Amino acid sequence: MKVSELMELIGATNLNPEANLDTEITCGYSCDLLSWVLAHGKAGMAWCTVQTHVNVIAVSVLMEMACVILVEGVEPEPASLKKAIDEEMPILATNKTAYEVCVLMGQAGVLPPAE
Image (cartoon, rainbow, N blue to C red):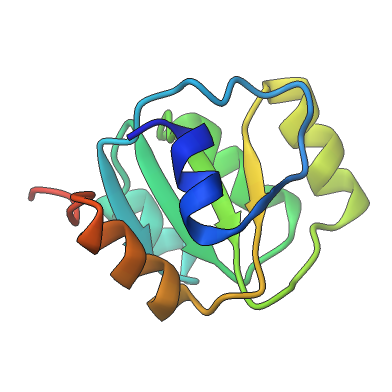
């Protein structure tokens, strides 16, 4: 599944017009503890979070994730959005909960990361 397809599936808005939405998603994840995401993140991951600070973008770029999904209507801090644009990291925003997004991803065949 590509980021653009996930965006449509979860009814999300793309907050970064500079981002490549053709990136393939390899797995899905939901976590708000950055150290945990650093330990378990994978390349191609679609990461659901309510965290909005610039370190979210740093972690997603470091781990070569496919996208960050901001859930429950949270909005990125301006510095985070700027960093995402600079790094070409897709940021999707949805009013759905992380649980709802993960269920939809799972139903579409996007699995949790393999350990």
